[in-house]
View 1 (cartoon, rainbow, N blue to C red):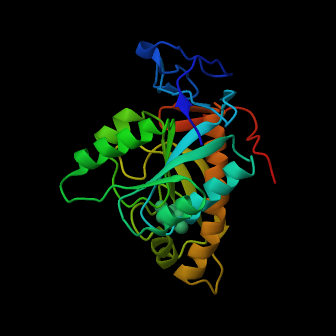
View 2: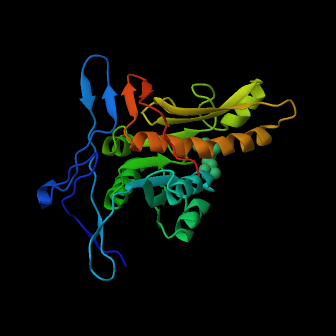
Length: 268
Ligand code: GRF
């Protein structure tokens, strides 16, 4: 059983305050440099203490991720695996889907992770996002990862997690944004495609790029075989990008992301 309590804590990047009026931890892992002024983005981080059965409080310092899925969730699985193996210092705190029977929700449940379906209703984006933000904040999420989430992100979610929402796209952006990117690339006849992990901004698939991985297009490829090989790279790229963001090595400068130091991603 895990009891959850707010508590004062200090970590490498965060300072938390015990009072009920200042529960949020302030930290500035992602800096956004927009031309002249330097503006630091602050996001709330809730500190959870877990209480084992003997009642002794054990500090939990893992970063908490929220993952949004609409489908099979292989990227979600890759993120959960990277967390479990310690390749990224995080845990998936909650998985949310707009589709009740998305297999991604089942993956979460199998792993003992909270899985929430918020059914999508046409024309009710704001209400959907308001509920999603509530669930994400309640779970203490500090970073939101879109992993095959088939909805455009609106202001409500974006404002709740400024510079803290990532997306993965199965092409080398800015080429082939939107749906069926692998098929678009294959039909265009490109010789190299790949995947991109980027910060989410109001422009669809156009946010600052964190990680890209290239995949050669072979002569005998079909759109499907190309998609399969891109997917393998997606799974590596997402863990790498999450690690970079959580460890404070991403600096957004205009539309570029500067990476500080080496990736440092631990290999298994
Ligand atoms: C991936 O190709 C991802 O790049 C795109 O949607 C697909 C989701 O696949 N955004 P999965 O659900 O993670 O297996």
